[in-house]
Length: 299
Image 1 (cartoon, rainbow, N blue to C red):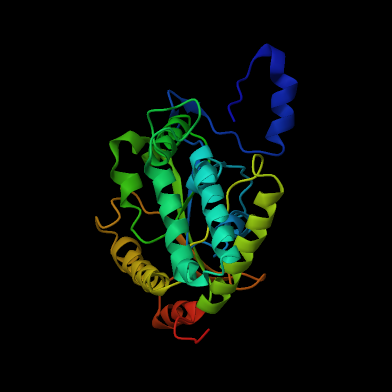
Image 2: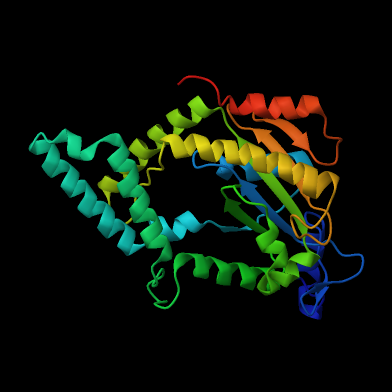
């Protein structure tokens, strides 16, 4: 929020000074002595509780911010193309149930079809009704660039399968250099994640069917072998980021200045903090992170 000292708003300024730190900027750059805005990147698989991380991060770091939230799924799930394809798929499922042709729609086929709908909607142009030339990834990039240039506090979600180099090295996002960057991973036991995703799908499907125009379309991520493979990739990526970007601070992540890495065990409501990069990384912490995923458990 920008607050300027003028004759007409002295009272307003005094009231806000008591509750918030004022970030002083000129020409979109932080003045010396001012507090930089926050860029928070939450990472983890679908169902891992990324949306709950903001409050936990704020509590852990003592932050009082209300960042702009940029979630790619919000664009995709509310897109008319997504809803149209989901409706057609649901009708097809019902028809095959009535024909008692259950093999045509096995669980694996359902995963595949919902996955195809998701990525088709993500990549096809016309993501927004008033914008026919951009797909959803491009819309997100445009929104991100705008908010970065305005020095807004920002919250962005990602799967965590790749290093955050894309945000640090893209010239369109060069204003990230003025930000305090926090990368937070949400870790959940694999079996718990299976349960959450199934429950989330059923709940979102019921909500959607109650009013398909007002509610977002449901999403069903694949829970097959590639799901386990992605979990293994995330574990590997976590340790690579710690070794290459936190301990060594080389060019692997592309950041010009250090960022803070937080890892939360989000398997239950307590959500234990497993790692904060301001502390030394030990083999014991590494084992805690591996145990938190419980990837070898039989579900």
